[in-house]
Length: 112
Length: 112
Image 1 (cartoon, rainbow over the protein chains, first blue to last red):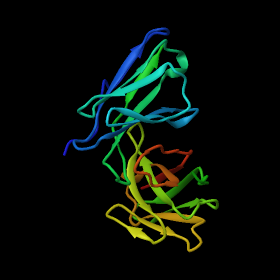
Image 2: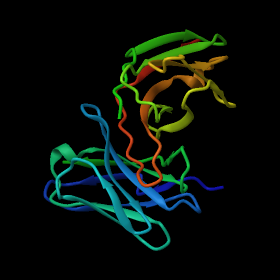
Image 3: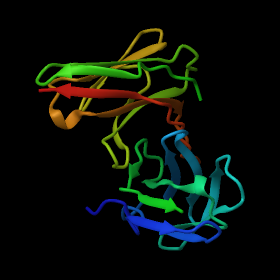
Image 4: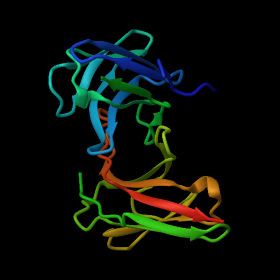
């Protein structure tokens, strides 16, 4: 069974640009969550989508947004990039009512 | 979610049992204890979870004290590949939300 996949794996952007990251969950998983990981703040929850609806949202500015498609694939978008947005962005998927969530390998975003 | 306290780092000799403690003195009756680990530059990996009883799976054992105020994750025969940051998370199991708060975890180093 294929795991959670994220594309691209690495990305370099310039301040002020925007970026879109993609996540394909494990087949059959309808919940997709996004996390940001930085050395200073650790792993922080961004948002969760379930059946194309945002179900939970962390404490991030509106520049961070996401969406989920009918096939459960999800994208997150960061507009007007700042240097502090440099981070590893992780996606996790979960089956309905399951206890465990499965993480992808992450997208390493560098903002210069 | 209840706050957890973990030692920042631990060492363990290869082949020996690794015992990782976690304090969660404010845990409520319905909150579960989850353990995840993150090997360098990879996404976190689910290990195990429990409510009241001790649990064991192919990866580890989880021992929860009778008063549920602390728990210990046991890796019975640590290998070099178990070197990782281990996160103890306490939260309610929710069918409608998947928001996990990861703390700073314990950095486990398995020594040859």
